Image (cartoon, rainbow, N blue to C red; front, side, top):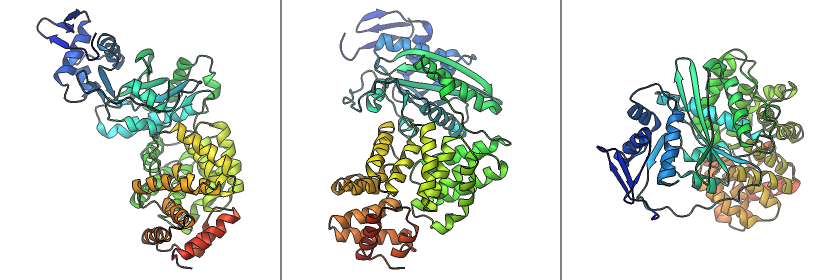
Length: 503
């Protein structure tokens, strides 16, 4: 059979010929193919296929997945591209894409969870669908022995026509999980399918239904079932530690879902103002919801790190950060956000380390926790350990768009290891993607100064002062979380020579 099969679809006779040979497929599979072929210039949503092929009958999305699998067997694994979070596109006859390369697939079970399709009929519910998938990914990262790609890498595929085999190679994983979410009144229905990336073979599918008010139990059951399907020897129920739940108001959880995407990427000042307002409302609705409080600490920490606000602007959040650490929580993300908050905003790396180490033990594959651990080790000059954490985070999140947090940590770490030349490549990439993120500008200033590029160092100082008029030598030395003496001496000398005011 040729590399690109030739299709002949006779709609009247309902016959399919591939390279002239008659191929028998079921009626539903034929109808799916015919509809994809008639709309091959665009992506066809799962909702549209269900409506047109099944004529409005109440059927499960899994029925569509079965027909897609049937067609891929007949036409080839790459005949129909998936568009995560949307639907499918017939791509037979398209120009073959270049071979996708990526990291080596780990020996342990490895998984990427793609964005789920929103079949609720309400586009404004995208954030809820994405939030459920993000929660699922976060829970799976807490399973020892399971290598799970971070949400920010998985979500780069949203809305793109992709071959699952390419996803597997690009992310370096053996399995891909795809699915959809439907809503009927206050009931959620989640359909998932686990696929072997290299072959496109469906190895497991399941449907979960529950009331929206029981969304946490639904997520827990979903996570345990996915883990058990991938690696039956994993004792998922013991490994998964559920996030602390809202105690009073489900709306508080909904507000946190809206904020999380704002903080995954390098945000703008107005994004942080919106995040602060939403999180204030979440905490007011449910003061006992520890995660909402911790996410608020994290928002202020990220805003101060980006130089969008001063340390004084964020100081009011510190009592709550310490209260969270004193609460005895076993929620890894609460520990991470509060621990990094006190380390950065209160220069208390020692107390932050206690929380981050506990968080890392609870959730060893969290990109956010690994990133925080890398930064804290850099604060105290433990650069080898810091580099191990950051490299692990970047491996788990190879398509990381969060240039302001994880990738920027390579700056001080590589400087501390004497690899200054390498810093420029990483940070200039971050700078061009997010030219107003203060941490990147700050580290670039010092990198240029170390390399003797005085004019570039002065340019960074000018840009920093434009977004942060209070920036001064004294302010930086008084507020920096770094405790490594050579760095403090470098900060002072570089800033003065770059023209930063004394303050």
